[in-house]
Image 1 (tube, rainbow, N blue to C red):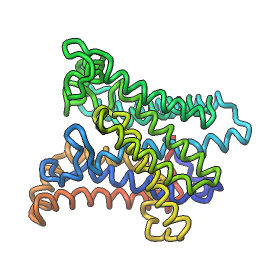
Image 2: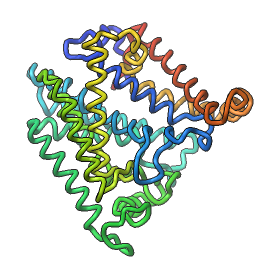
Image 3: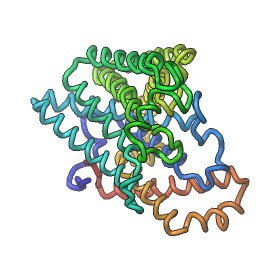
Length: 366
């Protein structure tokens, strides 16, 4: 990452929406909140992922961020293309950026043990990097109609693969943790390098990365509507997508762990409606001041998310977390509320870091 300290704040750019930064900031702040509980077993259910089928507010965070990546991608690429930029150069930049994000996520998994034989290959940052590259390739070579066709084809293809392709020893259509096609592919190709929380597959694994690309593409379509000044169509798009996701849930359940097509549609629908709400509150009604902290977080979202991972790693490796939880936070309230207070402390600390970076006109990007 590099600092553009000499540049003016991004919010002053002609194509930048304060509401998009606010939405991004809220999303990253909630991501930090749910990723850093004082006590994972005591945290509120809504601050945990759904065990399998279904969803909680926590399951909305990651797909929202990918959706926002798509919205921002439209603003960035469309403006540069209009200025005559070579699309091949733009894709080369996307490839470099995605590769660096992937590498940062991989290094996080590698440190501190440096166990090359068992290191987890994929993860949240890795999926962001891969999805941004794949979505960029589709965006730069297709019109908005083509992007919609690609989205529909990927989601339909993923549904067909997961429900019709037989898995050895299980047959077709298994959508349980063991025996589904995503799990089978991960177990075969990533053996020894899977997420420790599941052990038999990776929730950011190989096959499920493809429908995740559609979160970015649907965000890009929403960005197109914004650039065309068709904001009234955003909540309509959101309602249609959310309804489609709930409808498909009947035979291809909403599920984050295997990133089902219904999950993509449902989460992008909610993201579109919340983006419109942020736009109405911040940009139309002008209530920007109360959301300024989240706007600052949104301007350095990736840097602050990475910082949250570094902070958590330091607290765990130093033993500070193990001391702070029982001695400082646990006596303050009930276990669930104490766990929430711990999470909020990290959010507050990183929001202060966002303010510090913003106040010095430092915006860390790749």
